Image (cartoon, rainbow, N blue to C red; front, side):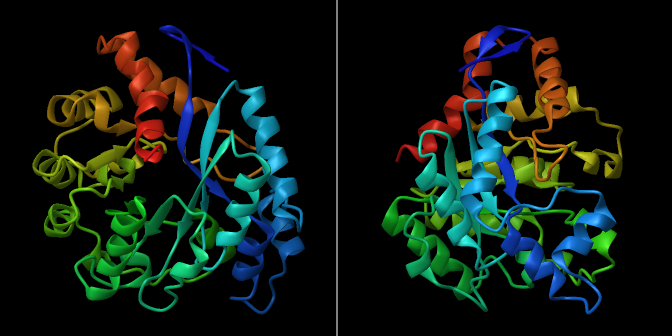
Length: 300
């Protein structure tokens, strides 16, 4: 399956889709007395997912088909929800990859990650150092099982929590990509994925990626962090600098899609494809960025 693009037909694999399962919303609802899953749907104007994650997976298959997207990485977006993405992958192994948010300090359960291909760490959210012994055991797990580790750095704002009036006691002391340097060097066989170009720590993310060939940058979301830069950056300039430093084979296209009825965020694809095409990226490198790089990492 291929999608129309400025280069013509292009195989697209989305490296960043949040799988907002019923369990995810139930966990949010449990954090505030007046919330329930149904009331969250009413408050947000979102379509709440069915109880069975396989049904939600089928909805995502339909959505990807509609947009001619061949595969997607589904992120279980709250610790303990690994079973939801595992069920999705079991039902559609040719369409999905299983990522899962883990909290290595309070809820490290490696026995639950057998079918998970990428463990997702959010140090600022869960308030720990990526250099801690607890975090390093996730890298040990990845090295032993030939898996990858996703590490969210930079600005972290969870829109659904804001809309529901839930506190977000995140700690940005733990969000600098520089802290990844020693860890990435210690585990050179583990692909380390940093989303959103470092989410405001663009310079630092590029520095570490330049020094660590196992580090990859995920391009997902609208990249609103660009407004924090001292010198004005636009998406084309971000891609130009990233290509200059890491090249086309360590960039992973993603949208940060998450909820229905919006579904797959096609505008993110269009904006990123246009920026790269205007920079003169050739068809082969576009194929790498928009899918082949992720497939190569996860084929391990």
